[in-house]
Length: 165
Image 1 (cartoon, rainbow, N blue to C red):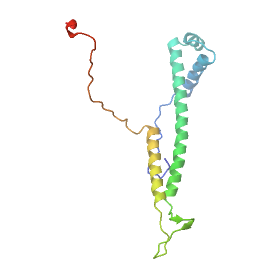
Image 2: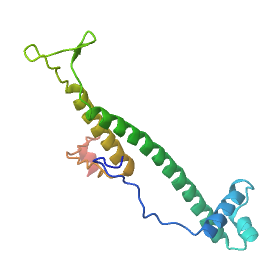
Image 3: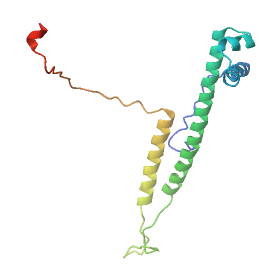
C-alpha cells in the first residue's frame, strides 16, 4: 500500500529469476513452437537438444509469460488500490462540517460549526475494503474452510428385497 499507511506493501522481493541467457533460449523455443509450428523433436534438432529439453524450454517460457502478465496485472491493481487508499486517507484526515441547504450548520448556543463524522467513517470503511482487496490480491487471506456434515440415504424403488438374496 501507500508508504506510511497502515497496510504494508506486499510486493515479493524474493522471486526466483532465471539467467538472461536461459530466458532468451526458452523464448526462442516457444517462438519456434508457436510461430513456426514445429514439434518438440524439430525444435530440439534446430536448437541442438533433446525433444524433452525442447519441451521443458517451451513450458518455462509459457510459465514465465504467464507470470509476467500476472505480475503486470497485479502491479496495475496495486496502483489502483493505492490511489483509492490515498484518497480515502485524505478524506479521513480532513475535518468535515454538517451542511444543510448549502450552508454550514452551527451549534445553536456556541455558534461553532457542527463537525460531521460521517465522511470520515465512510473513508475508514473504504480503507478497510481496499485493505481487504489488497490482501486478496496478494493471497494473504487464508482459504475459507468449508465443513460439510450430514448423511445420504439411498432408496431402491421397484425391487423386491427377497430377490436380492
